[in-house]
Image (cartoon, rainbow, N blue to C red):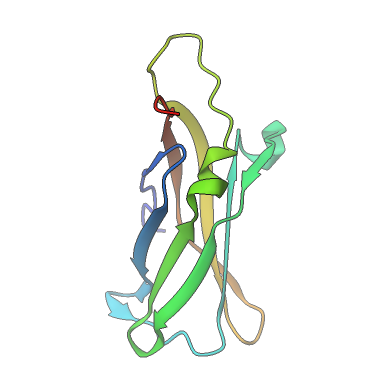
Length: 121
């Protein structure tokens, strides 16, 4: 199985979006009828990870397997950044699944989520 680890960087209190292309063997997979599932947690579920956010998505080019994950500034503001060293980014975790029209789930990305704490009010 290929390595799907890709970090995400979010500025707390800012709009955030990330474009993704779903590829299988290097070829874009048409996304007609697909659903995208993504969660950001404090840790993996089996380690007791608490759900922090579920980014929205827009399939903007289904024929070419392209979609956009997004969260508003209000949503990223609610990601609680608790670090014991000021100005250090907080590390959380995510994974991203595509669900085919038949219900088959495939994890296509996963990895750390680095959230930079908001400073300006």
